[in-house]
Length: 84
Image (tube, rainbow, N blue to C red):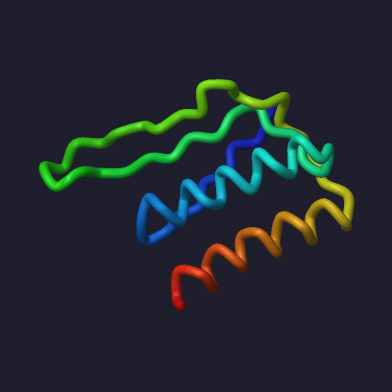
């Protein structure tokens, strides 16, 4: 069974930064993802999906404490960077 997690960011750049960091965590075997997609809406209201060309592994249904802490840090840093 897979989990779907959605997180909202104020702009596409922040979302792309988080997606790239999640991909890096996957390469480091800290996190397992099946896919990561950035969704945004253009000025005309059309929804666009921005998907990585090489989706990464599988969704991990539960994270150990260390992995969860790293994921939380990534999400918080992205939010802090946006606020700056």
